[in-house]
Length: 281
Length: 323
Ligand SMILES: Nc1ncnc2c1ncn2[C@@H]1O[C@H](COP(=O)(O)OP(=O)(O)OP(=O)(O)O)[C@@H](O)[C@H]1O
Ligand SMILES: [Mg+2]
Image (cartoon, rainbow over all chains, first blue to last red; front, side, top):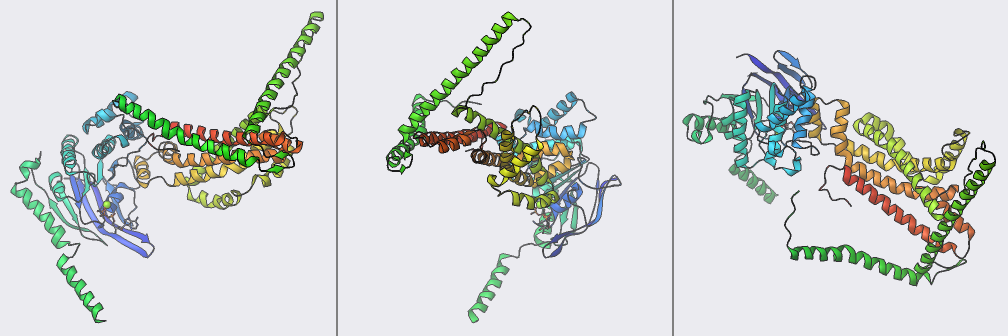
Protein backbone atom coordinates (compact mmCIF):
# COMPACT_ATOMS: atom_id res chain seq x y z
CA UNK A 1 0.00 0.00 0.00
CA UNK A 2 1.13 3.55 -0.72
CA UNK A 3 2.62 5.53 2.15
CA UNK A 4 0.37 8.27 3.44
CA UNK A 5 2.33 9.47 6.43
CA UNK A 6 6.07 9.06 6.55
CA UNK A 7 7.97 9.60 9.78
CA UNK A 8 11.42 9.84 8.33
CA UNK A 9 14.53 9.28 10.49
CA UNK A 10 13.35 11.50 13.27
CA UNK A 11 15.66 12.32 16.18
CA UNK A 12 14.84 14.66 19.00
CA UNK A 13 17.13 16.39 21.44
CA UNK A 14 15.77 18.52 24.24
CA UNK A 15 17.93 21.26 25.63
CA UNK A 16 17.96 20.88 29.41
CA UNK A 17 19.83 22.50 32.27
CA UNK A 18 22.34 19.62 32.25
CA UNK A 19 23.03 19.78 28.53
CA UNK A 20 20.97 18.32 25.74
CA UNK A 21 18.90 15.20 26.27
CA UNK A 22 18.41 12.93 23.32
CA UNK A 23 14.91 11.51 23.69
CA UNK A 24 14.48 9.93 20.26
CA UNK A 25 17.01 8.44 17.92
CA UNK A 26 16.28 7.69 14.30
CA UNK A 27 12.59 6.84 14.45
CA UNK A 28 11.24 5.83 11.05
CA UNK A 29 7.76 4.63 10.28
CA UNK A 30 5.62 4.55 7.14
CA UNK A 31 1.87 4.50 7.57
CA UNK A 32 -0.68 3.75 4.85
CA UNK A 33 -3.97 5.54 4.38
CA UNK A 34 -6.69 4.24 6.67
CA UNK A 35 -4.25 2.37 8.85
CA UNK A 36 -4.67 2.27 12.62
CA UNK A 37 -1.30 2.26 14.36
CA UNK A 38 -0.70 2.04 18.10
CA UNK A 39 2.44 3.24 19.85
CA UNK A 40 3.22 1.33 22.98
CA UNK A 41 6.18 1.53 25.32
CA UNK A 42 7.15 2.22 28.89
CA UNK A 43 6.44 5.55 30.49
CA UNK A 44 8.92 8.24 29.50
CA UNK A 45 10.25 6.42 26.45
CA UNK A 46 9.18 9.16 24.06
CA UNK A 47 5.78 8.23 22.68
CA UNK A 48 4.28 11.66 23.26
CA UNK A 49 7.37 13.20 21.74
CA UNK A 50 6.83 11.22 18.53
CA UNK A 51 3.19 12.24 18.43
CA UNK A 52 3.98 15.90 19.09
CA UNK A 53 6.52 15.89 16.30
CA UNK A 54 3.96 14.44 13.88
CA UNK A 55 1.45 17.02 15.10
CA UNK A 56 4.02 19.75 14.51
CA UNK A 57 3.98 20.93 18.11
CA UNK A 58 7.66 19.95 18.45
CA UNK A 59 10.30 20.46 15.80
CA UNK A 60 12.44 17.38 15.24
CA UNK A 61 16.16 18.02 15.55
CA UNK A 62 16.81 15.64 12.69
CA UNK A 63 14.56 14.11 10.08
CA UNK A 64 11.00 15.16 9.38
CA UNK A 65 7.41 14.31 8.59
CA UNK A 66 6.10 13.73 5.09
CA UNK A 67 2.40 13.73 4.35
CA UNK A 68 1.60 12.32 0.91
CA UNK A 69 5.23 12.85 -0.03
CA UNK A 70 5.38 16.48 1.08
CA UNK A 71 7.16 17.72 4.14
CA UNK A 72 4.91 19.31 6.77
CA UNK A 73 6.11 21.87 9.32
CA UNK A 74 4.25 23.35 12.24
CA UNK A 75 0.87 22.22 13.54
CA UNK A 76 -2.27 22.17 11.46
CA UNK A 77 -5.83 20.84 11.48
CA UNK A 78 -5.04 18.14 8.88
CA UNK A 79 -3.20 16.42 11.75
CA UNK A 80 -5.86 16.70 14.45
CA UNK A 81 -4.90 15.78 18.00
CA UNK A 82 -7.03 14.17 20.69
CA UNK A 83 -5.24 15.18 23.86
CA UNK A 84 -4.82 12.95 26.87
CA UNK A 85 -6.83 15.24 29.13
CA UNK A 86 -9.45 16.22 26.54
CA UNK A 87 -8.28 19.88 26.47
CA UNK A 88 -11.72 21.29 25.77
CA UNK A 89 -12.07 25.00 26.32
CA UNK A 90 -13.89 25.10 29.64
CA UNK A 91 -15.83 28.27 28.82
CA UNK A 92 -17.42 26.82 25.68
CA UNK A 93 -20.21 24.25 25.41
CA UNK A 94 -19.62 20.95 23.64
CA UNK A 95 -21.24 22.41 20.56
CA UNK A 96 -19.12 25.55 20.66
CA UNK A 97 -15.94 23.56 21.19
CA UNK A 98 -16.60 21.60 18.02
CA UNK A 99 -17.81 24.76 16.30
CA UNK A 100 -14.51 26.52 16.94
CA UNK A 101 -12.71 23.79 15.02
CA UNK A 102 -15.30 23.59 12.25
CA UNK A 103 -15.35 27.34 11.70
CA UNK A 104 -11.61 27.36 11.47
CA UNK A 105 -11.38 24.54 8.92
CA UNK A 106 -14.50 25.06 6.81
CA UNK A 107 -14.91 28.84 6.99
CA UNK A 108 -14.56 29.17 3.25
CA UNK A 109 -16.09 25.96 1.98
CA UNK A 110 -19.25 25.44 4.02
CA UNK A 111 -22.30 27.62 4.57
CA UNK A 112 -23.58 28.35 8.07
CA UNK A 113 -26.24 25.71 7.75
CA UNK A 114 -23.79 23.14 6.48
CA UNK A 115 -21.43 23.92 9.33
CA UNK A 116 -24.21 23.46 11.87
CA UNK A 117 -25.19 20.12 10.33
CA UNK A 118 -21.57 19.04 10.29
CA UNK A 119 -21.11 19.91 13.97
CA UNK A 120 -24.25 18.00 14.91
CA UNK A 121 -23.20 15.08 12.73
CA UNK A 122 -19.88 14.78 14.54
CA UNK A 123 -21.47 15.04 17.96
CA UNK A 124 -23.86 12.34 16.79
CA UNK A 125 -20.91 10.10 15.86
CA UNK A 126 -19.76 10.09 19.48
CA UNK A 127 -23.35 10.05 20.81
CA UNK A 128 -23.09 13.44 22.43
CA UNK A 129 -25.92 15.44 20.85
CA UNK A 130 -27.88 15.33 24.09
CA UNK A 131 -25.18 17.34 25.86
CA UNK A 132 -24.41 19.74 23.03
CA UNK A 133 -25.21 22.75 25.16
CA UNK A 134 -23.38 21.64 28.28
CA UNK A 135 -20.03 22.97 29.28
CA UNK A 136 -17.14 20.58 30.03
CA UNK A 137 -17.52 20.95 33.80
CA UNK A 138 -21.09 19.74 33.50
CA UNK A 139 -20.29 16.43 31.81
CA UNK A 140 -18.35 13.33 32.85
CA UNK A 141 -14.75 12.51 31.95
CA UNK A 142 -15.78 10.00 29.30
CA UNK A 143 -18.18 12.48 27.75
CA UNK A 144 -15.47 15.14 27.63
CA UNK A 145 -13.15 12.73 25.89
CA UNK A 146 -15.89 11.96 23.37
CA UNK A 147 -16.39 15.65 22.62
CA UNK A 148 -12.62 15.91 22.20
CA UNK A 149 -12.80 13.10 19.64
CA UNK A 150 -15.74 14.77 17.90
CA UNK A 151 -13.76 17.99 17.70
CA UNK A 152 -10.82 16.19 16.13
CA UNK A 153 -13.01 14.22 13.70
CA UNK A 154 -14.86 17.37 12.67
CA UNK A 155 -11.64 18.78 11.25
CA UNK A 156 -11.68 15.92 8.72
CA UNK A 157 -8.01 15.31 9.40
CA UNK A 158 -5.91 13.19 7.11
CA UNK A 159 -4.23 11.82 10.23
CA UNK A 160 -5.84 11.53 13.64
CA UNK A 161 -3.36 11.64 16.50
CA UNK A 162 -4.44 10.38 19.90
CA UNK A 163 -2.30 10.59 23.03
CA UNK A 164 -3.65 8.05 25.52
CA UNK A 165 -7.20 9.12 24.70
CA UNK A 166 -8.79 6.75 27.18
CA UNK A 167 -6.02 6.70 29.78
CA UNK A 168 -7.91 8.61 32.43
CA UNK A 169 -11.14 6.63 32.14
CA UNK A 170 -12.57 3.69 34.05
CA UNK A 171 -12.55 0.26 32.39
CA UNK A 172 -16.23 0.26 31.39
CA UNK A 173 -16.26 3.70 29.83
CA UNK A 174 -13.00 2.88 28.14
CA UNK A 175 -14.40 -0.30 26.57
CA UNK A 176 -17.44 1.62 25.41
CA UNK A 177 -15.35 4.33 23.78
CA UNK A 178 -13.06 1.77 22.17
CA UNK A 179 -16.11 0.22 20.54
CA UNK A 180 -17.32 3.63 19.36
CA UNK A 181 -13.90 4.40 17.98
CA UNK A 182 -13.81 1.12 16.03
CA UNK A 183 -17.22 1.88 14.57
CA UNK A 184 -16.23 5.39 13.53
CA UNK A 185 -12.99 4.09 12.12
CA UNK A 186 -14.89 1.53 10.05
CA UNK A 187 -17.12 4.24 8.57
CA UNK A 188 -14.61 7.01 8.03
CA UNK A 189 -11.47 4.96 7.38
CA UNK A 190 -9.27 7.51 9.14
CA UNK A 191 -5.54 7.15 9.44
CA UNK A 192 -4.87 6.96 13.15
CA UNK A 193 -1.84 6.99 15.42
CA UNK A 194 -2.79 6.20 18.99
CA UNK A 195 -0.56 6.07 22.04
CA UNK A 196 -1.60 3.59 24.68
CA UNK A 197 -0.36 1.84 27.78
CA UNK A 198 -3.00 -0.82 27.52
CA UNK A 199 -1.96 -4.00 25.74
CA UNK A 200 -5.53 -5.19 25.16
CA UNK A 201 -6.52 -1.85 23.74
CA UNK A 202 -3.57 -1.94 21.36
CA UNK A 203 -4.34 -5.44 20.06
CA UNK A 204 -8.07 -4.84 19.81
CA UNK A 205 -7.89 -1.58 17.85
CA UNK A 206 -4.73 -1.69 15.78
CA UNK A 207 -3.64 -2.87 12.39
CA UNK A 208 -0.07 -2.51 13.58
CA UNK A 209 1.45 -2.15 17.00
CA UNK A 210 4.67 -0.17 17.15
CA UNK A 211 6.69 -1.03 20.23
CA UNK A 212 9.27 1.45 21.38
CA UNK A 213 12.48 0.77 23.25
CA UNK A 214 13.21 2.51 26.51
CA UNK A 215 14.73 5.96 26.42
CA UNK A 216 16.94 7.87 26.31
CA UNK A 217 17.61 7.63 22.60
CA UNK A 218 14.45 5.58 22.22
CA UNK A 219 13.60 4.13 18.87
CA UNK A 220 11.24 1.59 17.37
CA UNK A 221 11.96 -1.86 18.80
CA UNK A 222 9.50 -4.13 17.06
CA UNK A 223 6.45 -3.80 14.88
CA UNK A 224 3.64 -6.29 15.21
CA UNK A 225 1.15 -6.76 12.40
CA UNK A 226 -2.27 -7.60 13.83
CA UNK A 227 -4.20 -9.71 11.35
CA UNK A 228 -7.55 -10.03 13.07
CA UNK A 229 -10.69 -9.72 11.05
CA UNK A 230 -12.86 -6.65 11.49
CA UNK A 231 -15.31 -5.95 12.95
CA UNK A 232 -13.65 -7.18 16.09
CA UNK A 233 -15.60 -8.21 19.10
CA UNK A 234 -13.86 -8.05 22.45
CA UNK A 235 -15.74 -10.98 23.98
CA UNK A 236 -15.22 -13.31 21.04
CA UNK A 237 -11.56 -12.35 20.83
CA UNK A 238 -10.81 -13.00 24.48
CA UNK A 239 -10.28 -16.70 23.79
CA UNK A 240 -9.13 -16.39 20.18
CA UNK A 241 -5.74 -18.05 19.90
CA UNK A 242 -4.36 -15.42 17.49
CA UNK A 243 -5.47 -12.63 19.80
CA UNK A 244 -3.92 -14.31 22.82
CA UNK A 245 -0.73 -14.82 20.87
CA UNK A 246 -0.50 -11.13 19.79
CA UNK A 247 -1.13 -10.09 23.33
CA UNK A 248 1.64 -12.37 24.56
CA UNK A 249 4.07 -10.97 22.01
CA UNK A 250 3.48 -7.40 23.15
CA UNK A 251 3.76 -8.40 26.79
CA UNK A 252 6.99 -10.25 26.10
CA UNK A 253 8.45 -7.19 24.43
CA UNK A 254 7.45 -4.90 27.26
CA UNK A 255 8.30 -7.06 30.23
CA UNK A 256 11.19 -9.18 29.01
CA UNK A 257 12.99 -7.44 26.19
CA UNK A 258 12.44 -3.88 27.43
CA UNK A 259 12.20 -4.51 31.12
CA UNK A 260 11.91 -1.15 32.76
CA UNK A 261 11.82 -1.98 36.43
CA UNK A 262 14.23 -4.52 37.81
CA UNK A 263 12.52 -7.47 39.46
CA UNK A 264 11.73 -6.83 43.08
CA UNK A 265 14.02 -9.68 44.23
CA UNK A 266 17.07 -8.05 42.58
CA UNK A 267 16.28 -4.69 44.10
CA UNK A 268 16.00 -6.27 47.53
CA UNK A 269 19.35 -8.00 47.17
CA UNK A 270 21.05 -4.72 46.31
CA UNK A 271 19.50 -3.05 49.28
CA UNK A 272 20.76 -5.70 51.67
CA UNK A 273 24.24 -5.29 50.23
CA UNK A 274 24.05 -1.57 50.86
CA UNK A 275 22.77 -2.16 54.36
CA UNK A 276 25.58 -4.60 55.01
CA UNK A 277 28.10 -2.01 53.88
CA UNK A 278 26.58 0.57 56.17
CA UNK A 279 26.70 -1.88 59.03
CA UNK A 280 30.37 -2.65 58.36
CA UNK A 281 31.38 0.99 58.25
CA UNK B 1 -32.07 24.30 36.02
CA UNK B 2 -34.01 21.83 38.01
CA UNK B 3 -35.17 22.95 41.40
CA UNK B 4 -34.63 20.39 44.13
CA UNK B 5 -37.85 19.55 45.89
CA UNK B 6 -38.08 21.25 49.25
CA UNK B 7 -40.12 20.10 52.17
CA UNK B 8 -41.65 22.78 54.35
CA UNK B 9 -39.36 21.75 57.18
CA UNK B 10 -36.19 22.09 55.16
CA UNK B 11 -37.39 25.42 53.79
CA UNK B 12 -38.00 26.66 57.29
CA UNK B 13 -34.60 25.39 58.24
CA UNK B 14 -33.03 27.31 55.42
CA UNK B 15 -34.79 30.53 56.24
CA UNK B 16 -33.74 30.28 59.85
CA UNK B 17 -30.19 29.40 58.95
CA UNK B 18 -30.12 32.25 56.52
CA UNK B 19 -31.38 34.90 58.90
CA UNK B 20 -29.19 33.70 61.74
CA UNK B 21 -25.96 33.09 59.93
CA UNK B 22 -26.20 35.83 57.35
CA UNK B 23 -27.61 38.64 59.44
CA UNK B 24 -27.22 38.02 63.14
CA UNK B 25 -23.45 38.16 63.37
CA UNK B 26 -22.94 41.20 61.17
CA UNK B 27 -25.62 43.09 63.09
CA UNK B 28 -24.05 42.05 66.35
CA UNK B 29 -20.64 43.21 65.10
CA UNK B 30 -21.99 46.58 64.05
CA UNK B 31 -23.80 47.10 67.36
CA UNK B 32 -20.67 46.36 69.35
CA UNK B 33 -18.69 48.72 67.16
CA UNK B 34 -21.19 51.55 67.56
CA UNK B 35 -21.21 51.04 71.32
CA UNK B 36 -17.42 51.11 71.61
CA UNK B 37 -17.35 54.13 69.34
CA UNK B 38 -19.84 56.05 71.47
CA UNK B 39 -17.96 55.23 74.65
CA UNK B 40 -14.54 55.85 73.15
CA UNK B 41 -15.44 59.07 71.37
CA UNK B 42 -16.58 60.83 74.52
CA UNK B 43 -13.13 60.33 76.01
CA UNK B 44 -11.21 61.96 73.17
CA UNK B 45 -11.08 65.74 73.44
CA UNK B 46 -9.79 68.00 70.68
CA UNK B 47 -9.55 71.75 70.24
CA UNK B 48 -12.78 71.48 68.24
CA UNK B 49 -14.57 69.65 71.03
CA UNK B 50 -15.26 65.99 71.64
CA UNK B 51 -14.49 63.41 69.02
CA UNK B 52 -17.76 62.82 67.14
CA UNK B 53 -19.74 59.83 68.36
CA UNK B 54 -22.55 58.07 66.50
CA UNK B 55 -25.26 60.47 67.69
CA UNK B 56 -23.33 63.55 66.58
CA UNK B 57 -22.63 61.91 63.24
CA UNK B 58 -26.30 61.17 62.82
CA UNK B 59 -27.24 64.79 63.54
CA UNK B 60 -24.65 66.06 61.10
CA UNK B 61 -25.92 63.67 58.46
CA UNK B 62 -29.41 65.10 58.87
CA UNK B 63 -28.13 68.63 58.65
CA UNK B 64 -26.19 67.80 55.47
CA UNK B 65 -29.33 66.33 53.96
CA UNK B 66 -31.31 69.46 54.88
CA UNK B 67 -28.61 71.72 53.47
CA UNK B 68 -28.68 69.83 50.22
CA UNK B 69 -32.43 70.06 50.08
CA UNK B 70 -32.41 73.81 50.76
CA UNK B 71 -29.76 74.36 48.14
CA UNK B 72 -31.90 72.56 45.56
CA UNK B 73 -34.90 74.72 46.46
CA UNK B 74 -32.76 77.83 46.11
CA UNK B 75 -31.52 76.64 42.75
CA UNK B 76 -35.05 76.02 41.52
CA UNK B 77 -36.10 79.45 42.63
CA UNK B 78 -33.09 80.99 40.94
CA UNK B 79 -34.04 79.48 37.62
CA UNK B 80 -37.73 80.31 38.06
CA UNK B 81 -36.84 83.93 38.69
CA UNK B 82 -34.74 84.06 35.55
CA UNK B 83 -37.43 82.45 33.46
CA UNK B 84 -40.01 84.90 34.72
CA UNK B 85 -37.72 87.78 33.92
CA UNK B 86 -37.14 86.46 30.42
CA UNK B 87 -40.85 85.94 29.88
CA UNK B 88 -41.54 89.46 31.05
CA UNK B 89 -38.96 90.85 28.63
CA UNK B 90 -40.37 88.73 25.82
CA UNK B 91 -43.85 90.05 26.45
CA UNK B 92 -42.57 93.54 25.75
CA UNK B 93 -40.14 92.63 22.98
CA UNK B 94 -41.02 89.42 21.05
CA UNK B 95 -37.56 89.34 19.42
CA UNK B 96 -35.75 89.09 22.72
CA UNK B 97 -33.86 85.81 23.18
CA UNK B 98 -33.22 85.08 26.81
CA UNK B 99 -30.19 83.26 28.08
CA UNK B 100 -30.27 81.29 31.31
CA UNK B 101 -27.29 81.85 33.55
CA UNK B 102 -25.96 78.85 35.46
CA UNK B 103 -26.62 78.60 39.13
CA UNK B 104 -23.39 79.09 41.07
CA UNK B 105 -24.23 77.99 44.57
CA UNK B 106 -21.82 76.22 46.85
CA UNK B 107 -21.69 72.48 46.08
CA UNK B 108 -23.30 70.44 48.82
CA UNK B 109 -22.04 67.21 50.35
CA UNK B 110 -24.07 65.20 47.86
CA UNK B 111 -22.84 67.25 44.92
CA UNK B 112 -19.31 66.46 46.06
CA UNK B 113 -20.13 62.75 46.27
CA UNK B 114 -21.44 62.83 42.74
CA UNK B 115 -18.34 64.66 41.49
CA UNK B 116 -16.03 62.16 43.18
CA UNK B 117 -17.98 59.23 41.80
CA UNK B 118 -17.81 60.21 38.18
CA UNK B 119 -14.21 61.30 38.51
CA UNK B 120 -13.19 57.96 39.97
CA UNK B 121 -15.15 56.06 37.33
CA UNK B 122 -13.60 58.11 34.54
CA UNK B 123 -10.08 57.65 35.92
CA UNK B 124 -10.60 53.95 36.51
CA UNK B 125 -12.22 53.50 33.09
CA UNK B 126 -9.30 55.17 31.35
CA UNK B 127 -6.85 53.08 33.39
CA UNK B 128 -8.66 49.87 32.38
CA UNK B 129 -8.73 50.91 28.74
CA UNK B 130 -4.96 51.26 28.85
CA UNK B 131 -4.07 48.46 31.24
CA UNK B 132 -6.12 45.57 29.83
CA UNK B 133 -4.88 45.70 26.21
CA UNK B 134 -1.34 46.46 27.35
CA UNK B 135 -1.51 43.64 29.89
CA UNK B 136 -2.65 41.21 27.19
CA UNK B 137 0.19 42.32 24.94
CA UNK B 138 2.75 41.93 27.72
CA UNK B 139 1.39 38.54 28.71
CA UNK B 140 1.45 37.24 25.15
CA UNK B 141 4.92 38.40 24.26
CA UNK B 142 7.83 37.83 26.58
CA UNK B 143 10.02 40.37 24.78
CA UNK B 144 7.48 43.12 25.34
CA UNK B 145 7.29 41.91 28.93
CA UNK B 146 11.02 42.19 29.49
CA UNK B 147 11.05 45.58 27.83
CA UNK B 148 8.27 47.03 29.96
CA UNK B 149 8.78 45.23 33.25
CA UNK B 150 11.42 47.59 34.71
CA UNK B 151 9.26 50.61 33.88
CA UNK B 152 6.20 49.04 35.47
CA UNK B 153 8.10 48.06 38.59
CA UNK B 154 9.41 51.60 39.05
CA UNK B 155 6.13 53.41 38.44
CA UNK B 156 3.95 51.03 40.40
CA UNK B 157 4.91 52.21 43.90
CA UNK B 158 4.67 55.96 43.14
CA UNK B 159 2.31 57.78 45.46
CA UNK B 160 -0.46 59.97 44.03
CA UNK B 161 0.95 62.92 45.94
CA UNK B 162 4.07 62.76 43.83
CA UNK B 163 2.21 62.64 40.53
CA UNK B 164 -0.21 65.42 41.35
CA UNK B 165 2.01 68.50 40.81
CA UNK B 166 3.28 67.11 37.51
CA UNK B 167 -0.18 66.23 36.27
CA UNK B 168 -1.51 69.63 37.32
CA UNK B 169 1.21 71.46 35.44
CA UNK B 170 0.88 69.34 32.32
CA UNK B 171 -2.91 69.69 32.25
CA UNK B 172 -2.73 73.47 32.71
CA UNK B 173 -0.14 73.78 29.99
CA UNK B 174 -1.66 71.46 27.41
CA UNK B 175 -5.41 71.74 27.91
CA UNK B 176 -6.20 75.23 26.73
CA UNK B 177 -9.52 75.74 25.06
CA UNK B 178 -12.03 78.55 24.89
CA UNK B 179 -15.00 76.48 25.87
CA UNK B 180 -13.56 73.51 27.78
CA UNK B 181 -15.65 70.37 27.84
CA UNK B 182 -14.02 69.25 31.07
CA UNK B 183 -12.78 71.37 33.91
CA UNK B 184 -9.05 71.29 34.57
CA UNK B 185 -9.57 70.11 38.11
CA UNK B 186 -11.55 67.13 36.81
CA UNK B 187 -8.80 66.23 34.37
CA UNK B 188 -6.08 66.58 37.00
CA UNK B 189 -7.88 64.32 39.44
CA UNK B 190 -8.78 61.85 36.74
CA UNK B 191 -5.27 61.50 35.31
CA UNK B 192 -3.77 61.18 38.77
CA UNK B 193 -6.22 58.38 39.50
CA UNK B 194 -5.41 56.71 36.19
CA UNK B 195 -1.66 56.87 36.73
CA UNK B 196 -1.91 55.40 40.20
CA UNK B 197 -4.51 52.71 39.72
CA UNK B 198 -3.62 51.07 36.41
CA UNK B 199 -0.79 48.89 37.70
CA UNK B 200 -2.65 46.07 39.44
CA UNK B 201 -4.87 45.56 36.38
CA UNK B 202 -1.86 45.67 34.08
CA UNK B 203 0.18 43.19 36.10
CA UNK B 204 -2.64 40.78 36.86
CA UNK B 205 -3.85 40.75 33.27
CA UNK B 206 -0.32 40.03 32.07
CA UNK B 207 0.12 37.21 34.58
CA UNK B 208 -3.28 35.74 33.69
CA UNK B 209 -2.53 35.84 30.00
CA UNK B 210 0.91 34.31 30.44
CA UNK B 211 -0.55 31.50 32.54
CA UNK B 212 -2.91 30.08 29.90
CA UNK B 213 -2.75 26.30 30.07
CA UNK B 214 -0.27 24.75 27.69
CA UNK B 215 -2.82 22.24 26.41
CA UNK B 216 -5.16 25.01 25.38
CA UNK B 217 -2.32 26.76 23.58
CA UNK B 218 -1.67 23.49 21.75
CA UNK B 219 -5.33 23.32 20.75
CA UNK B 220 -5.03 26.81 19.36
CA UNK B 221 -1.89 25.86 17.45
CA UNK B 222 -3.42 22.70 15.98
CA UNK B 223 -6.47 24.69 14.87
CA UNK B 224 -4.16 27.39 13.50
CA UNK B 225 -6.34 30.03 15.12
CA UNK B 226 -5.70 33.54 13.93
CA UNK B 227 -4.22 36.06 16.33
CA UNK B 228 -7.53 37.75 17.13
CA UNK B 229 -9.53 34.54 17.53
CA UNK B 230 -6.75 33.18 19.73
CA UNK B 231 -6.95 36.20 22.03
CA UNK B 232 -10.75 36.31 22.13
CA UNK B 233 -11.52 32.60 22.42
CA UNK B 234 -8.60 31.35 24.48
CA UNK B 235 -6.50 34.03 26.12
CA UNK B 236 -9.10 36.42 27.51
CA UNK B 237 -11.46 33.79 28.97
CA UNK B 238 -8.63 32.07 30.80
CA UNK B 239 -7.25 35.37 32.07
CA UNK B 240 -10.59 36.73 33.26
CA UNK B 241 -10.38 35.66 36.91
CA UNK B 242 -6.97 37.28 37.42
CA UNK B 243 -8.01 40.25 35.33
CA UNK B 244 -10.87 40.92 37.72
CA UNK B 245 -8.64 40.49 40.74
CA UNK B 246 -6.57 43.27 39.21
CA UNK B 247 -9.57 45.41 38.33
CA UNK B 248 -10.93 45.23 41.86
CA UNK B 249 -7.58 46.15 43.36
CA UNK B 250 -7.33 49.00 40.88
CA UNK B 251 -10.76 50.36 41.68
CA UNK B 252 -9.96 50.28 45.40
CA UNK B 253 -6.75 52.18 44.83
CA UNK B 254 -8.49 54.60 42.48
CA UNK B 255 -10.98 55.55 45.16
CA UNK B 256 -8.34 56.08 47.84
CA UNK B 257 -6.09 58.03 45.51
CA UNK B 258 -8.92 60.26 44.38
CA UNK B 259 -9.82 61.40 47.89
CA UNK B 260 -6.17 62.18 48.64
CA UNK B 261 -5.76 64.03 45.35
CA UNK B 262 -8.88 66.11 45.92
CA UNK B 263 -7.69 67.10 49.37
CA UNK B 264 -4.24 68.06 48.18
CA UNK B 265 -5.23 69.85 44.99
CA UNK B 266 -8.45 71.41 46.32
CA UNK B 267 -10.28 69.81 43.42
CA UNK B 268 -14.04 69.42 43.83
CA UNK B 269 -15.14 66.16 45.45
CA UNK B 270 -15.36 64.45 48.80
CA UNK B 271 -11.69 65.13 49.52
CA UNK B 272 -12.28 68.83 49.20
CA UNK B 273 -15.32 68.56 51.42
CA UNK B 274 -13.18 67.01 54.15
CA UNK B 275 -10.43 69.57 53.73
CA UNK B 276 -12.87 72.52 53.73
CA UNK B 277 -14.49 71.29 56.91
CA UNK B 278 -11.07 70.87 58.49
CA UNK B 279 -10.10 74.44 57.53
CA UNK B 280 -13.49 75.70 58.61
CA UNK B 281 -12.93 74.40 62.10
CA UNK B 282 -16.42 74.94 63.48
CA UNK B 283 -17.87 72.79 66.22
CA UNK B 284 -19.74 70.81 63.57
CA UNK B 285 -16.66 70.11 61.48
CA UNK B 286 -15.45 66.92 63.08
CA UNK B 287 -18.91 65.38 62.91
CA UNK B 288 -19.19 66.27 59.25
CA UNK B 289 -15.77 64.88 58.50
CA UNK B 290 -16.79 61.68 60.21
CA UNK B 291 -19.91 61.51 58.01
CA UNK B 292 -17.64 61.91 55.00
CA UNK B 293 -15.27 59.21 56.28
CA UNK B 294 -18.13 56.74 56.65
CA UNK B 295 -19.50 57.72 53.27
CA UNK B 296 -16.11 57.22 51.62
CA UNK B 297 -15.88 53.76 53.14
CA UNK B 298 -19.41 52.86 52.17
CA UNK B 299 -18.97 53.98 48.57
CA UNK B 300 -15.68 52.09 48.35
CA UNK B 301 -17.53 49.01 49.51
CA UNK B 302 -20.32 49.52 46.98
CA UNK B 303 -17.82 50.00 44.16
CA UNK B 304 -16.16 46.70 45.03
CA UNK B 305 -19.53 44.93 45.16
CA UNK B 306 -20.41 46.38 41.78
CA UNK B 307 -17.21 44.96 40.31
CA UNK B 308 -18.08 41.61 41.85
CA UNK B 309 -21.49 41.67 40.17
CA UNK B 310 -19.86 42.47 36.84
CA UNK B 311 -17.36 39.65 37.37
CA UNK B 312 -20.19 37.20 38.08
CA UNK B 313 -21.87 38.33 34.92
CA UNK B 314 -18.76 38.10 32.73
CA UNK B 315 -17.18 35.00 34.23
CA UNK B 316 -17.94 31.74 32.46
CA UNK B 317 -17.53 29.71 35.61
CA UNK B 318 -20.72 30.45 37.51
CA UNK B 319 -19.90 27.87 40.16
CA UNK B 320 -16.80 29.77 41.18
CA UNK B 321 -17.10 31.21 44.67
CA UNK B 322 -16.46 34.92 44.47
CA UNK B 323 -15.97 37.11 47.50
N1 LIG C 1 10.01 19.64 26.68
C1 LIG C 1 10.89 18.73 27.15
N2 LIG C 1 12.09 19.13 27.62
C2 LIG C 1 12.97 18.22 28.09
N3 LIG C 1 12.76 16.91 28.13
C3 LIG C 1 11.60 16.44 27.67
C4 LIG C 1 10.60 17.32 27.15
N4 LIG C 1 9.53 16.58 26.77
C5 LIG C 1 9.84 15.32 27.03
N5 LIG C 1 11.08 15.21 27.56
C6 LIG C 1 11.77 13.98 27.94
O1 LIG C 1 11.70 13.10 26.84
C7 LIG C 1 11.42 11.79 27.28
C8 LIG C 1 10.19 11.26 26.59
O2 LIG C 1 9.06 11.95 27.02
P1 LIG C 1 7.60 11.63 26.52
O3 LIG C 1 6.68 12.61 27.14
O4 LIG C 1 7.61 11.56 25.04
O5 LIG C 1 7.36 10.19 27.12
P2 LIG C 1 6.08 9.25 26.98
O6 LIG C 1 6.55 8.00 26.34
O7 LIG C 1 4.97 9.98 26.35
O8 LIG C 1 5.75 8.95 28.49
P3 LIG C 1 4.31 8.71 29.15
O9 LIG C 1 3.90 7.36 28.71
O10 LIG C 1 4.58 8.76 30.60
O11 LIG C 1 3.41 9.79 28.68
C9 LIG C 1 11.27 11.83 28.79
O12 LIG C 1 12.47 11.38 29.36
C10 LIG C 1 11.07 13.28 29.08
O13 LIG C 1 11.67 13.60 30.30
MG1 LIG D 1 3.05 10.80 27.07
